[in-house]
Image (tube, rainbow, N blue to C red; front, side, top):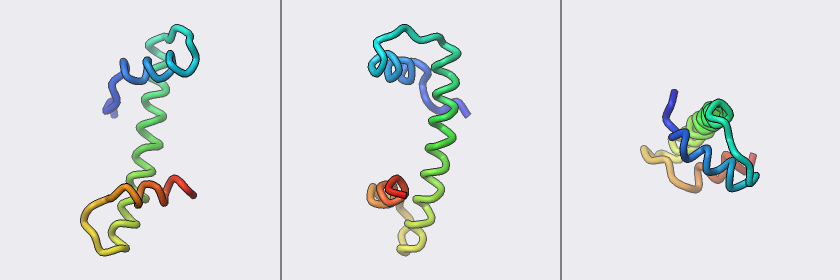
Length: 67
């Protein structure tokens, strides 16, 4: 995987906690976020195909996240 920048994930953790973050902690969260993101994207693509579109739109993502 490795799509999300570790520095960005580090900032998210620091912003939400106010604590320092180890690189391994940021990597673990990045991996988890990528897995969740892939599942959301796959399901959203099903909504898009069902609607007869070749483009995933924001409403497709929102539908998945409501579930």
